[in-house]
Image 1 (cartoon, rainbow, N blue to C red):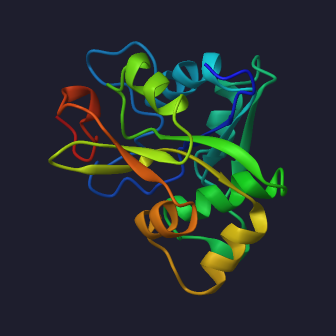
Image 2 (image 1 turned 135 degrees about the vertical axis):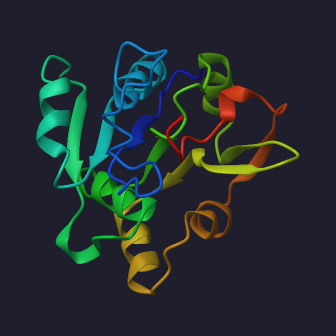
Length: 188
C-alpha cells in the first residue's frame, strides 16, 4: 500500500428502487452487518478517512452506525444536486474537503467485494475495476476536487462512467469475472 493513503468514499445514498429497500442498510441473509458497514470496514485499512455519501432518509441511521469511528464522516446530498445518482454522492463528499484529493470509491452495491480486489484497486491510482463482461465504475481510484465535480454536474452530466473515464482519466484494471463483483440490484 502506498505511504499516502487515499480518502475513502462509500456511496450509500441511492434510492434502491430495483432492490425495494435501502441497500446500504440492508443485511443480507448470509451477513451479520449492513452492506454499508461491510464497505466501510473494507476501506478502513486502506484509507485515512472515509466519507459515507447518504441521502436524507438514511443519514441519521448511518450516523448512528458509525458514531464510534471518528474517521468516518456522513455527508448528505446537497440541495443543488439531489437525485444525481453516484455523482451527487461524490459532490457531497468532495464538498467536505474541496481541494484535490486522492479518492478510493466503493458503492454499497458490492457486499461480496474482497479485500484483495479492493487492495488491487488501491494500489493503482486513476483506475477502476473491470472484467471482460463489465466495467465497475463505482469501484474506482482517482484524483479530483470539488470544483471539478461541481462543473461536471452543472454542465448537466450525470453519468459516473463519463466522469471516471473522461474527467478523472481512469483506466480499467482488468480482473477475472468473480462473484465478488456481483452488483446488488435485486433482493434474492
